[in-house]
Image (cartoon, helix red, strand yellow):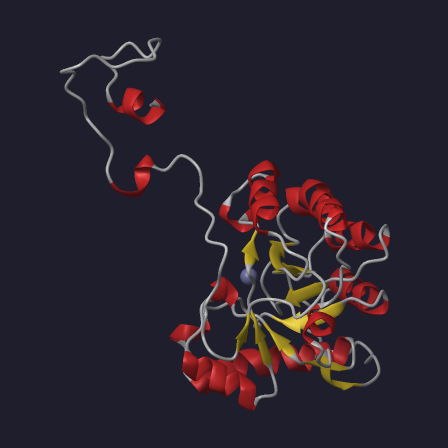
Length: 262
Ligand SMILES: [Zn+2]
C-alpha cells in the first residue's frame, strides 16, 4: 500500500482503503519489493559445497578488516570457531601491518583462513590463466604472512561456473558457497538478517556473512551465535564441518621485507 500511495500522490495516504473504481498507477518490476526476498541457496553446481555435513559454520568474507577482532571476540565467548574468506587487496592491502596482525591473530585463535581471490573479482568472467593469477597472488601473501596454502575457496559474489570449479579443484581447492545468506552485504539490517537465519537455520547450516559490514560483528553475529546455540549445534570451521583439511600445506611465518606490498 505504501508503494501505491507513493505512486499516486493524489490519493489521501491517511486512509487505509481504496475506493472501488479508483484509477491507480501501479509499480512494476522489482520496484514493488519493499524488503529483500531471501534467496537462501547459492550455486548448486556439482562440486560446490553449500552446506555442512554436521555442525554449523558461520563464515565471514571480504577481510581482513578492522572489525575482525570483534568477530573473534564473539566466537571466543562461546568457544566457537569460524572461517574467514580473505582477499589480498579489497578493503585494504593484506600486507599492511594491521592486516598481518589481524590474520595472525585469527589463525592463532584456531579460525580457518580461506581464499576469496586477490582482488574480489567475478571469476566467471576470467580465463583459467587469469583466475590462476588471482589464486597465485593470495597464495604468495598467505605463504609469507602465515606460512599456509589455503584449501578452501569461496568465489566473490558466489559467481562461478563448472569450468571454474574444475580449475579450482585442479589447484587443490574445495569450493565453498553457503545455504544461508544473511544478506548483510546487500544492505539487510540485522533484524532482517535474523529473520532469514531463524527461518532457515538447521543444525548443519553454512552461513554467509561479511566482516566488513559494521553491524555484522557488532550486532548480527552475537544474535546468530545465540540462535545457533538454541539449536544445540556447535560452531565450527568449514573444514571441520566438511571433514577435510583446512590447508594444502602449513609452514612458518615469514619476515617482512620489500616484497610485502600490494
Ligand atoms: Zn566477497
